[in-house]
Image (cartoon, rainbow, N blue to C red; front, side, top):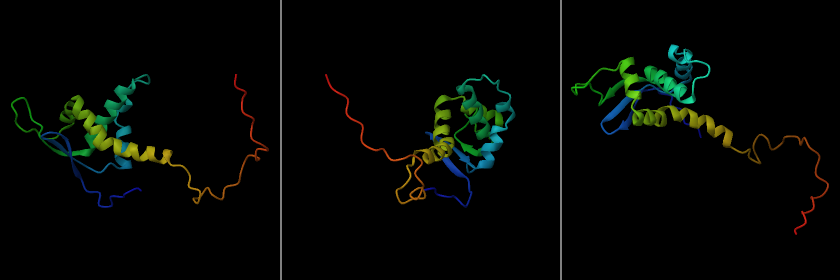
Length: 145
């Protein structure tokens, strides 16, 4: 079942102990905008999947992250959200993985679910016309040596 969030309100994501991000809802507009990001479009055509994934994650995060807690400078002073800070944050492998899993993957999982569902016998394909003639008889079993 698809659950619609009609309020479209931001939510906090806990990515690591002491680190959380306030993110905007993952919408089609946000993803389309991220795909058109200059850093994503500047990648060469033969860029690796890893480079593409990192560039896309950073583009999504630059649009989605509204605030954060637990991010500081070298002296431990809190720093405000900035495109440079988001890029640096996602260079930390566990943070990148957590962001991908907790935020970006939600949309991908929803997309994948539609490919795994078999048609129901009483669903819209129940009345579909057969396109192949029935098999006249079952095939014989292969002889065993």
